[in-house]
Image (cartoon, rainbow, N blue to C red):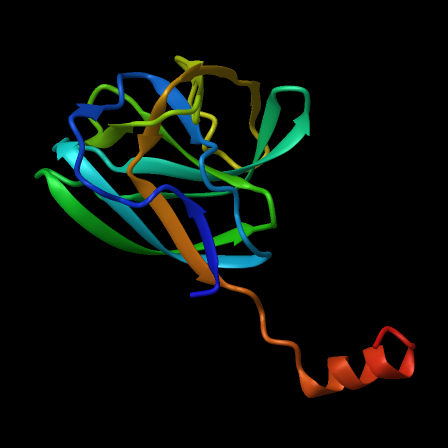
Length: 165
């Protein structure tokens, strides 16, 4: 996979709280294309699916959801994998919403303020946006992986004809 976004999905000692949309800013998207695989480490199981979103900066600390899906539900702890279809662009961030019945995503201590959040709103809805606050020296065990679209021979030839290469 040539695109990644988010921190590795690994075991840790903490978990996300309730009723927040949280962005993990530790690893912005490394390419533009599609996220096709989500890896998440669940610390405490839950009975409802987890909304996941790909977010981009609008201005200041306002981020908008580019694409969204739900994964799970995951009723037990551990590493989980989900197949998804999420649009992503270079520099986007991965996020999730955790209500009262979703599984709790594992947190790991970080040296940086990598988690940003909005209280009491599910912003993992395409087009939804919010003013996120920085405030947590943690990594969220949530990573998206995907691929950039292949460049067709016809498109490549057209770019050569136009003097791009």
